[in-house]
Image (cartoon, rainbow, N blue to C red; front, side, top):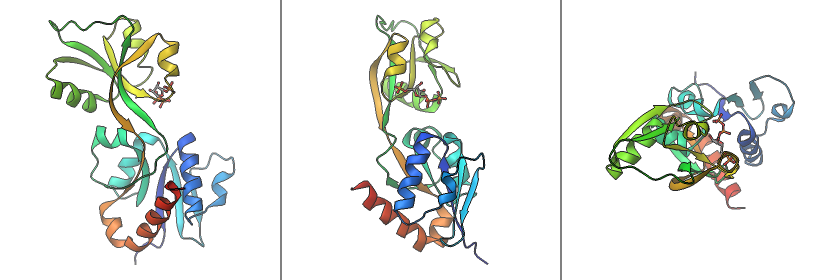
Length: 211
Ligand code: PRP
């Protein structure tokens, strides 16, 4: 028998709360989710929807492997990991950009590879490959901004939202790589077998983004 629930992976945190509010208005409410508990899974039996909170960078994994039928992930994650999922809609929220940043006085010495610190190694590699610039890639998992300050790297490739983190660490944007926003994604076989409900949700969410 086909599973009657629509399983939705939401990114835990500020963006997830905004996104849940959109799903609620789109006809898939689950009020229990707003209770301030440490629970990670919530169901609305009447609407046949089940939400779970996962780390934002893990949403695409749940969706790709079918543990979630649909989910919401940033364009940064989709471009970094290239998961085999359908991208159904730009939700318009969670806007920021992928950028190259460095110390204000940074000058590129093209005689040696550029040392690039980042969480986004695939994005950084592709970007510099396309520019024909040799790099020495340094894979970090957080606090990327201190790498150029301590001389670990020449530049960083990271997400910039308000620019406050860069400013407070005396760095500045040197190049913008691409704009980022949150996307609705679907598991490929769920999209086939739960087409009606996913399509209805997508259409309602699209109307929400136009308000
Ligand atoms: C991102 C990014 C920057 C910060 C930029 O980190 O890595 O550190 O946000 O935001 P700002 O321009 O508004 O200062 P995030 O908060 O996603 O946390 P993470 O480093 O744990 O991924």
